[in-house]
Image 1 (cartoon, rainbow, N blue to C red):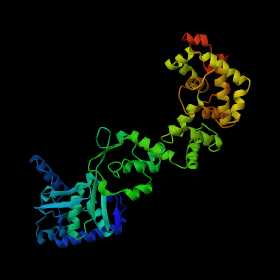
Image 2 (cartoon, one colour):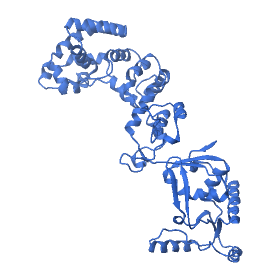
Image 3 (cartoon, rainbow, N blue to C red):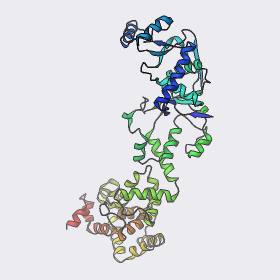
Length: 450
């Protein structure tokens, strides 16, 4: 079985050979009486349209040359008058097709009017081209947008006239914008290349587009390409138009991104970090650990810049100025800061971070015990002091990565990275008494200037 996804996307045979093929079939239709030569000038055709408009009738051809005698035709041919080939549409009756999506679809013949299949310069028109092409290539299924239904009427008539087997037609509903209008360029990026540049994976795009008007009958929305090939059936395609939801597409891309093998995901994200000038390397243990820590915050590849930049940043001033930050200041945050500085100055924290996760866990447990703090009362203020943020990924993993980034040649000089040394310098200069009176702490830049 040969299947055509969309007839209009097919590459036609080269002009010389192709036009010969179309001319051959057009002449066959002339002989059978399904097509006739029309010698009407452009001026005559325009006049017909104007008359129809005045009479509030559809602008269909009046059939001036439909019943011309052989003598009239030969006379025009002898004069060299240009002519088109017009298909003779039956004046009565209906044409019915069984659409695989829409069921039975039918048209009255008298709504169409005789239409041109070949122009006066010998060029075939679209509907004639695709019918001859599809028939000669034994195309079995023509699946395309619902706006091609009017073309299907013309093509079906040509199929019948030429005696070709009719393919199965299926007209898919249009993809709609959030306002339920037809999706267009004004609603955002439309080309595949643009979506790739925006960080979307090919498999995620295919998965999402497949679900626009189709489902396998379950609640499952995540499909690999192989699963789609196995499960897809035209019988489950909906008649109604589906809304293109960019938020849903981002979510689905995130699912596919995190489903990638670790090596592939590390390579993809690592190369992005290096190409954007944040890191100076694209592979290695730091990349692997950073991707593992931050991947839940990445829905499209370009999100990786934001999550790594967020990890490297230290917005302590903004955090302490927030309502939640002020509540921590009032809850003796300065005391925990002093103890943390002491642990840093005596080398305890640095030595623990060198040991990795086991060293951090051992140290933080001991640190909390010395302050008689545990759980949220310990980890929330500790996160604020070390990361400058109220929320984020696993704190231990974050601090270990920050330690590695500050002690190894990993982060680019142009990245907005605040090292652990610089963070403790900020903490050392904070006037907690002034801060408790709503006076802002010193910014890192101000400390450097001093």
